[in-house]
Image (cartoon, rainbow, N blue to C red; front, side, top):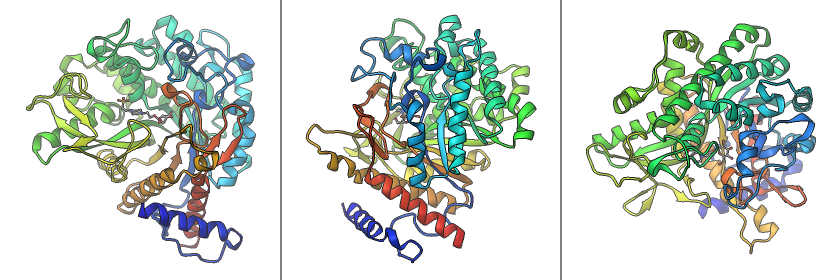
Length: 515
Ligand code: GBH
């Protein structure tokens, strides 16, 4: 409460003072003091193709797994889909103007694989799709906004799902390599930040263990599916994702990187796991949870093997890397993208008994109960989004954890933000007044600054999201935008958080250049 009124006070001062830029206003906002972030730090907003673009069948685009999934009945809370989404495909110039107004110097987006290759490598290259992204990239650069592109953000051409089961088949590696090659070839002269995947850990877990995302595979008590194996399939899918990442990195390193001078990495969803108690068992449980979620991908990519906690618990269930694979994996990555929103407690289930079926307790998940609550008290304030608890300290902790474990590989906070739900009673003015989001972002950025002050090599921060958009299973009911979108008219309106972020960036930049 206290924080929100002081933030609002500051914003009022800022609003009154927008004509006096250059005079020094001393701000009490957390995270606004000098030199917390290095020169060249990217301040951006993030998006993804399926959630933003719409234009489902325009200009030769093929269908993706998410097009197919959202058109199945009962999959999406409000029965909606991304056919139109927020029509960013057509309105991208207007959206880039919003970015310019915010003062962001980077934009994270993803390329729709099916827009470029409607049938994967089994069909033609869709030049209209190439032209589209080329125009977007040029329009960004014209405003001094660095494009930061992901090759996939949960989406894959439906053709590949149908031909061979997409990520379950090693054949996907060839397809991904083929697709990545095309993207580097056409866009790499202008795109200097490449992410192979957005959240492959979430893709593997939700697509193949709980089955709540396409291709809707799961088994037993893990979910309600007609096909799949919740224990084996996520491991196999992840294995193919890791080797697909390696294939793309190899192409980039061998053919393009020297000439184009960009960097390539992967974006992971990250949760901070706080041990439930001080016991040695719970501390190990928190490490196990981290290994089964994050190190699952980072360890093989950086060190060539699955984390030891996974090897101990899963043994021969884990797929193996051949000598050939290991050779291909040696090229690692240049940066780690971290999507961070939330923290949980982690409680041991090896030495103590846990309720079967609860999150995290199965052997496949690492025998560590994941819970937001301890002795009746939440780890952080619950929010309108059922998996986000406001625990800013988790940001510093997870960044420091990755720094220590990954030899301070350059990092980007590739997503951070808060979802809100529109109440039928709320007026548009109320709804633009997203104080909770401002509190959330400012405290998380402050925590991030603590990590960078202590030496973490973080090179950018991206707010999720520029606009309200299609929030996966929640459809259009949960809104993450710095800008409100009226989904009927597609009109964009800046929220309080947009004004706040703009000032935050402005202050940071001014301090950085005068430091
Ligand atoms: C990100 O996902 C996405 O990249 C973005 O597209 C999305 O719009 C945004 O966040 C907001 O949701 O059940 O084991 O996967 C984050 C999705 C959902 C990831 C909850 C972590 C809990 C762990 N998150 N999930 S698990």
